[in-house]
Amino acid sequence: MTTEQFHVDGDVAIVTGSSSGIGRVIAERFADDGVDVVVCSRDIDNVEPVAEGITDSDRSGDAHAVECDVTDREAVEALVEATVEEFGGLDVLVNNAGASFMANFDDISPNGWSTIVDINLTGTYHCTQASKEHLADGGGTVLNLSSLAGKQGAPYMSHYAAAKAAVENLTRTLAFEWADDDVRVNCIAPGFVATPGVASQMGVTADEIDRDEVKRRIGTSEEIADVAQFLASPASSYVTGQTIVAAGVPNIMESPDV
Image (cartoon, rainbow, N blue to C red; front, side):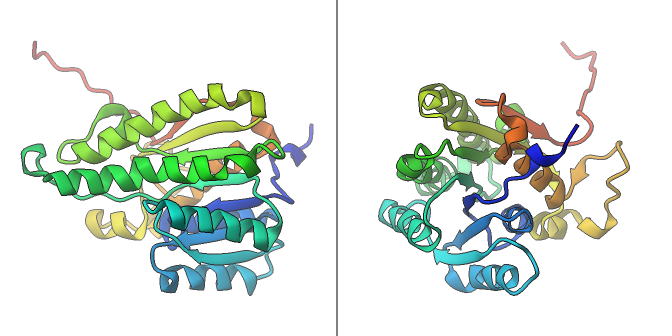
């Protein structure tokens, strides 16, 4: 038995929405494993420190920062071109960029609805379609980030839940369509993760989480990066079109209500 198949050494990856949280940790994890990563966000000032931190560390992978709004097709195409120019190709695409806000469905404006759907769903469409030529060149991998909200719904986040449900359906559909091109497409649906944003809302930081504790409902970005590394590695060669839920103990409740 060997663990070599769990490595993604030598690949080139784009990780969108990687200025902080899950995206940043995935980018750092890939670089730890020898992957050259392009990190991007809408504000270059937020993502340049991530690339510099990777480049200046002892990680075996390199990093390059690009400013990109995933809702802007021209910007996405420029992102892919910059990746190929910098590192010579593209093997792994991680569609992590996302956004949401809380509101009752009745109070979500058409602009608010389209903004959230554009970032979470249409941004995934732009990045994935624009990357196809290079991903298919060497049997690449697409990792989409959904959410537990996309599976079970989310009160006061209906726009976000609907978009993430669509991302999961797109994952399964595209896995079928792109199989002939040897491109695998999978999805990760995290539950609550102690990112800086969630930590500020829930009052729980990543430092307070014990990974050995099974009975919990909040995880760490590193635990999502573990799943991402598996799905980007040859160890998951027989896995495509799947959504892996990483959300701790299932919320199972019985009720006498009928």
